[in-house]
Image (cartoon, rainbow, N blue to C red; front, side, top):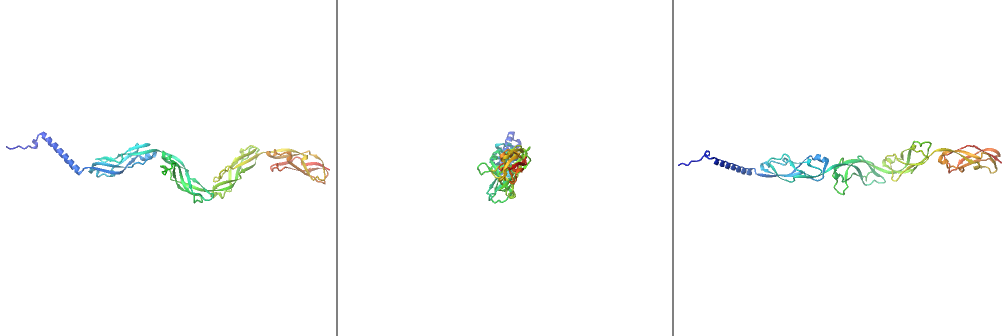
Length: 413
């Protein structure tokens, strides 16, 4: 009896399913074997990949980052060998977005754009970038000049900075560390005025070699170096206007008459006098003494220290006063051999005196010196001319004397 062989078509349904499962499993196992042999799992590390910082420039307009932070990251990827082997560092695109940053401490997560397919991050050297930020401020500072050395003789240097003030910008705590912005100029070999550009230096309040991390609006500044010297000059004052009313300026005195001044060396040789400002006399309206501090017009000429020159004014007005002097005060010259028997006219001599009030009010009758010359050969009654003047202690060229009586009538014996 022949044994019957089953064909697939005659295999029962349950047997068919089992057969299919076995076939699938065999295929999977075969695929895994082939994959692991020909395209196994693979690990690849990309070192020091540059991190892109989005919005950094906009952030740094308002804030300064005060710490050092990483700008690269090392990334280790896992995946199939065929997928990873064709990747290079340019395919890894890490970035940090500064929109999440703020003043103080911030941890900014590292993200990736266009990440490779079929690749997975296994390890990263850092997962975020840590920054410390401080708000930016601006501060305007005066440019100082520090000199090195000394000029020969009694001369010295002064400096004119073209841009006297400059702005510094940076984190608030860094700006506060700045003590001054300065230039350093060596004057040792200078014998004449010079001009040049000098680098600006930032000096710190702290005794540290580390300079504050701030930015200057400019790096250099032009400085004119002017050599000065000293000289003694006469003081010249300028008067305008007249005192009010009938007041007159009698005289004025400058104290001291000479002053020690300093001026640019190239100009000092031609300077003979130092000129004051214009003094307006119309503001004075009283008799007496007044004084005024002098201000000088020579812009480049400066007074040496501890000198305060002033001008003293003496104001007065002219008056007229009549003096009566007894005839007995007259001194007759030439009466050794003759005798004055009688003075018939006048009994008093009168004089009209004109001059400044302060001088006129001091005059007394004893201050008049009256003399007359008598001819010894003359006898009888006649009129005699006389001379009248004041004693030297009260006399002044501003005083005039007018005789009311021109002659004295006397009788000689």
